[in-house]
Amino acid sequence: MKPFKKLCLFILLGIFSFSGCKSDDEIPKPEPESPFEITDHFVAGTLTQKSGSKYTSVFFIQFLEDNKALFINSSSNNLVGTYTLTDDELTFEVTGGNERVARFTLDENKKITSAYYRALTMEYDATGQLLPVSETNELAGKTFMGEEFKMGEASNRTGVIYTFNKAGTTTYGSGTTDAAEIDNTVNNYTLIGGNGFKYVSGSKVELGFISNKELTVFRVDGLYFYGKYAQQ
Image (tube, rainbow, N blue to C red; front, side, top):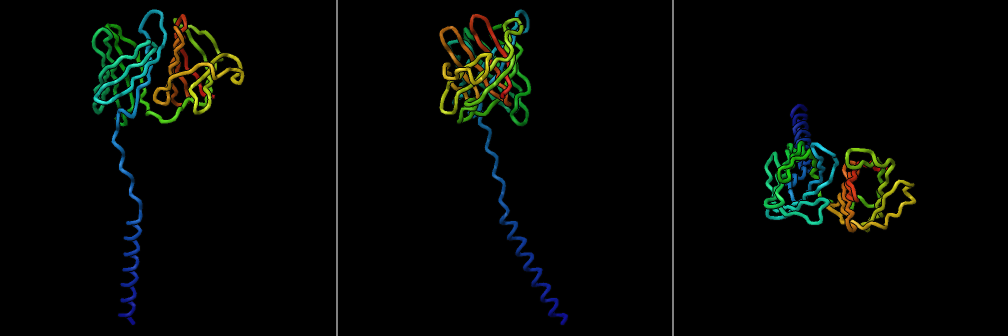
């Protein structure tokens, strides 16, 4: 009986061993991480004067092929420059009469940890976020509310509402009344990266972006106005 018991034990061990190998083979292997592509991202940031009558404006940097990039702010003309990307730094530069440099420090996850900006000889306090380009309109159908400031860092209006029209449209409205009473079909904007917008009507320009359920906006309308608005 002892040889028979040993034979049974060996058979059982073989079955368990085979079963274990099979289950290991069936465990799905994690998908390899996709390489980071800067052209699948864009920078959304803010600029504030270091002194004087301050205000906070908004800018975007869109990354193109062949190390080219587009700088977008409230100006009527976008600026074409070049960019350089290393493991821990991203630099954008425009040369010539519109000379400017934007430099961003990156962590190991390609998140911006600090920002520097200079236009000609003037330096600004800068912020920046490296956001993924979205195929969908992240603004559509959302409403935001907060306090608006004007040049000189003075409060201009409280309870300001921005409401963006439904998906499939690129219009919005703003005001200080109930969101349901604001016409969000009146202002037609250009979508930037799926998370940002720019609206131009004559001398009035408004642009902003959404990040972490907060809308950052800058408006040129006679004076300079700006604010951050929480998603409702």
